[in-house]
Image (cartoon, rainbow, N blue to C red):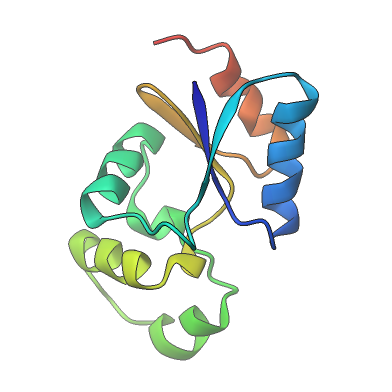
Length: 117
């Protein structure tokens, strides 16, 4: 089953969820602002995304611009920062078994739909 890390207040996240629902795909919705990810969960997700923590940060967020922009952190520190400030996480993230994608643009989701690993 697919999982979507979703923020219902985010237009891009709602678009990704609707895209999956319109295709009749069963999906587990994880509202990560309510049920926060642990550092271990985020690290596993990064492996599935094949991305670094800095690749999944929303740099347009006020918290990033006011507190983090221009500062240097190692990957573990970035993971901790994202877990403590989940609004920084790009969304939606769609996950299946051993792969995950960021669903913005929505066409990225297609790359995971045919994956049955």
